[in-house]
Image (cartoon, rainbow, N blue to C red; front, side, top):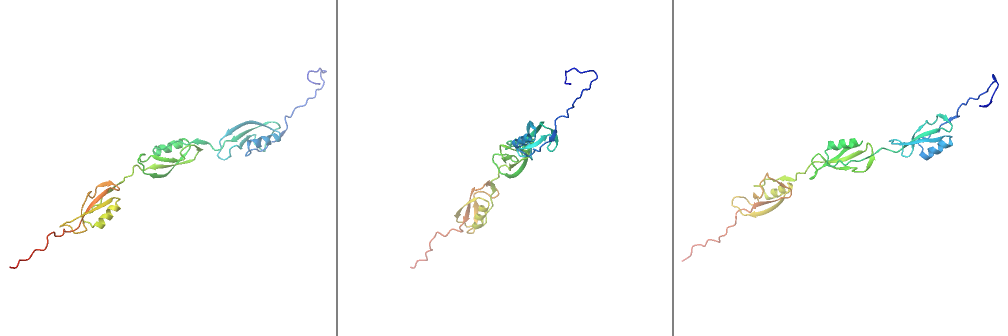
Length: 239
């Protein structure tokens, strides 16, 4: 008899015990897009359960990276399959490390999950020695573990040069030495009773002094003794 009906004492009652829903094969949907996965799940006789997102270095953004229950197992027909969809690689904002010391820049980048590589060094009149002049990339979002390349300052370039001592040298040597040192040379010539012609007698900036590149230095070159200014001495007059 059905439930609620009356029956004779001692009479037999037959009952049917449910075996639950039939278990069927769970489809493998990892690697599919979310739309593809939903369709496959529905066609297989299941429904889509909770859908969440996670970052992944290996699964393309928008594709299913995990499912519960797993594919190629069995589950009750009509039950729900939960999905985890990839958001792609975890992206972080690149911090500005220009002006920081190399150690401080490395620590700041590592805090964001990024790496530092020194691409080179350059002279700078505005950035202190050992600090970062420039970086690449310099802003925006990048995947974690991206390497940020930096150029480090060598400090202000010393543009001074030592003035060569050319007194006593030939004009040709003196001019060459000044030009090799990065200096501009001016030549004046004067007569001298004591210095042979073509030899440097004086220089406007003493040898050994340090001056800026391009500084003009005047050298005075001997023309030898001055020619005699007197005429021929007249001979004795006849008378």
